[in-house]
Length: 279
Image 1 (cartoon, rainbow, N blue to C red):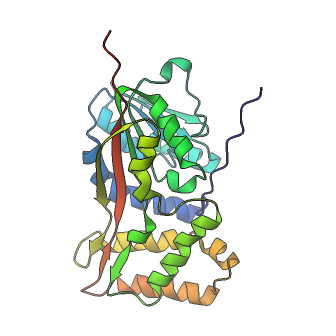
Image 2: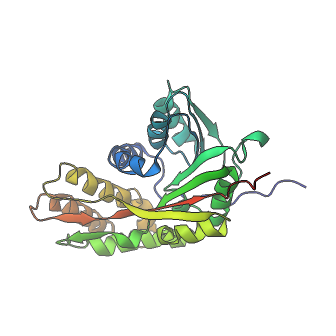
Image 3: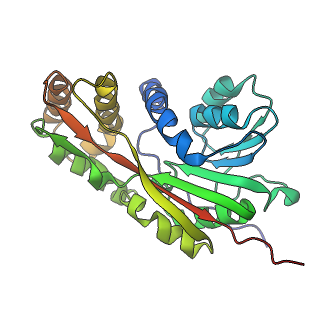
């Protein structure tokens, strides 16, 4: 019997140069905030599902050192090309082309990883539970699975830039039209339990900033870039182009206010695969 065809992922942002630049900026901010939560040690074996441009994988690889092993899976050809450049010179990294529903792992690799990590993956999949079940199967007995993903409803700005909150809501609701779940972040623990794992911890990785924070401009630019990357799709949904552009321009100017603040958190959950029964 031929293998079941995996359902496609629906990535609303595309792989333009502007999107690649946004991802690089996002990783520069977020990686330093998430890595302490992961608690990686030199020599760990790590599997990353949905490696994207490889910038998060590079940070993971540096944390486990050359004595560790990182297998990174990515299906998109443009993302793979970028990841190969980013990860060059890290001998502990094995970057593989493949689908997260059916990752290209050898038989002996299943059940061998100390950590399986998925970040900003599940929100782009029509069947996130299937991907989490794959992650659970790949973790070793006693190993961990960590999911980090978006609950888009969490974003708040104050004082609100004109039109921004309404545009943001239109943006994240477009995920539903693609068959994806823009609120999957609040469901991470449930997904882990459904995959047969024991949840151990959940938290937020803060991804906001305020006026006076050196990163504030970059954080706002990232959020604006997220929406800008979905422009074509949103205009196809009937959104007015000039108004769309004006809201983004006004939001970028809003960064200059001395009382502006953006509040957001990446949902983060960890679970453990049951240890082996004693012999």
